[in-house]
Amino acid sequence: MHEEIRSLAKRKNALILAHYYQTLDVQSVADEVGDSFALAKYARETDADIVILCGVRFMAESAKLLSPLKTVYLPAPNAGCPMADMVTPDDVLMLRAEHPDAAVVCYVNSGADVKAVSDVCCTSSSAVKIVNAMREREIIFVPDRNLGAYVAKQCPEKRVILFDGFCPTHHRISEQDVIDAIEQHPDAYVLIHPECREEVLRHAHFIGSTKGIIDAAKRSDREELLIGTEIGVQEILMRDLPDKRVYSIGSTFTCPNMKRTRPEDVLACLIGEREAITLPNDIARDARLTLERMIELGG
Ligand code: SF4
Image (cartoon, rainbow, N blue to C red; front, side):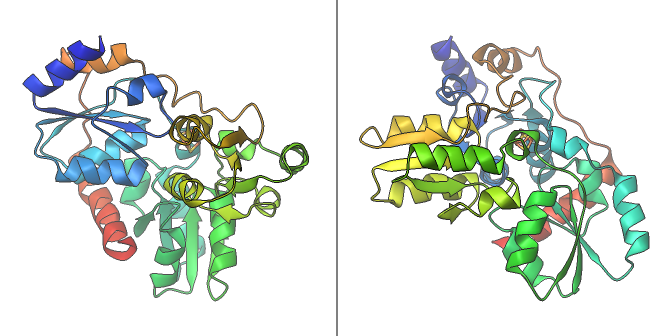
């Protein structure tokens, strides 16, 4: 099936993109593997006619926003992001009414309709830079309260108003989980994603985005690594760093939505058995501006 996918992709001028949290099987049929921001940029820069985004819905929407003339597919149509679904445009508008002087920064893990009513988008790697670059002192940060709290700590001159959303996969890791893991691997270099709770982040040697964690792990000269993000990152590092011992904090660090895509679903896109992503024009226009501003401010 892998050969069939690759040859059909070539024939149809399709670019297959996979997020780091996808299974290694799905990653192996992709042209590029990356985090959500990198994937959206690949989608924008390619001259392919079709983009197949192996990830969750907001990622495919972002790819469509940044490359509106391309046909974009989400191979597993029911792969959503529970955190993105926690916030609605009405929530943002209500917060705006309560804090009229604040700017709204929305995490890229949000729906196009939420992006459309926000001022700028951010990724976990650009959040601090973007919040710092805003001229407003008050910032409404949606939807992730953990990333928002981390950003607030890094930007003490800003007043960050948090929304109550969270990533179930990262939020379920407790401080006791990280203490137990460090007790088992006391020499390990501890790398944790800022979608985790503040009391978990306190134990990290390195805090960073998915790509930041992968790069820092590869740069590290430590023999043992303890990873505090989705299990896909541990799998990638075990494959790429066979001389190191790579552990995960907790055995439940899996995002079920990210694991929904199978190579069969990618094939289904290529043979026309999936619906392409479409977005209402007004939402797409406003959400695109929010994403473009992220690229402008976040680099
Ligand atoms: S890991 Fe968390 S933020 Fe990422 S797609 Fe899964 S639920 Fe959403």
